[in-house]
Amino acid sequence: MPGTSTSGWLPVEIAFDPQPAVISEAMVSWLEFGSAPLAEPFLERTVARLRQATPPAREITTDLETMVRVSGRLPAIRPAGFIFHISRSGSTLIANALKTADRAVVVSESVPVTTLLRPYSDSAGPYLSARWNRSRRTLLESLFSLYACYRTGEPEPLVIKFVSINILCMAVVRSYWPEVPCVVVVRDPVEVMVASLEGGGWMNLKASPELAREFFGWESSPEEMSDEEFSARVLGRYFACALEAVDAKCMVIDYEDLNARRIQDIASFFAIELPSGAKSLERVFRVYAKDPGNRQFRDDRARKQQRASASVRSAAREWVMGPYHELRGRIL
Image (cartoon, rainbow, N blue to C red; front, side):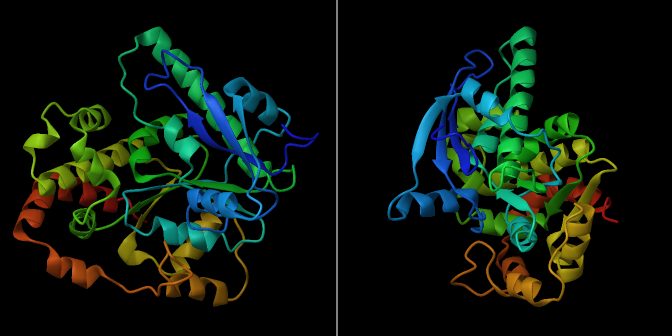
């Protein structure tokens, strides 16, 4: 690492082989963040801003062993909280609200974390799979220490918001950190399906049937499914994995219940102190969470319900509404 201090440097990519349980070596790309907060809605946008700056942020490449060694100089930390979600359900709004805290690092949809929690095929055999499980935990612990300490060298409360597909590995994360408070953000599947059928996100997996079968454990091919069935079955799998992993340290939040009071509840659950007064949260709720600088928030629940076709509602009833209502039953 340049200089004598590693403060301000974070890994932004880990280039694993498609079978990391077999080939565990990988190169790590680092970027110099300095002490600036991760203010953008997603970590990748902060990365893009720094790369486009004048001059651009410095970058280096190391191996995994170097990342573990560098993080080993820092205190081991326990994250303040985890945020899992099913996509398009308000998790970005929650993360943005928590970023208003003076002392908190909120890492939203980190590429290295996503890479480590990708649902890889379990075909390597018991020994290699167990080795990969140990390595994955070590690498996640390394990343979390680096994230928590990057600004000052001392740990700050850390919140990790995962990408939606990481909910497939929620049970793994809970097994590593059972004492870390965890929020699971859900939404009426019909509304999520209407949004997802516009394209992008996990709907792109329908064009990669082998990958989709590997991720979701399906025997039937996505090519044989309608878009509505594919969308509903993905959501059904998300909800099923959440149901398997939810425990006493988990809080289930439905999009329709999100308001300033619930945000305060989540912050308290994570032991994070938000600024006093309502103005900072008012602004978070006033703007579109994924583009807070340019767009105003519009409640789209009624519009999405109106746009839901009979085929969307039928697929939702068959594949996802049952586990959705079961998970909603965990709301306190």
